[in-house]
Amino acid sequence: MFRLKLSKEEKDAVIREIQTYFQVEHGIEFGMIAAEQIMEAQMQTLGPILYNYAVQDCRKVIQEKMLALEDELYTLEKPKTR
Image (cartoon, rainbow, N blue to C red; front, side, top):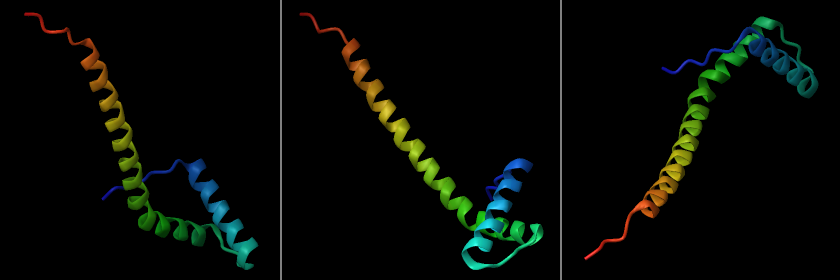
């Protein structure tokens, strides 16, 4: 299974965002451990979905580049002589 590894700084920032969101939007305060558990659960659910979208985006970019390269190769062909 794909496992995303966040740096400590990234992890701490996400945890603070979760705490702030629930405090502001719902009036609920979470400690660091609870917020981290929420983050881990969401990463397990959303991680593979977001990863697959990123792979699809990369595939599209590479296909576009390959088509452009193929067009350039056709321009390099020499006309046939008799």
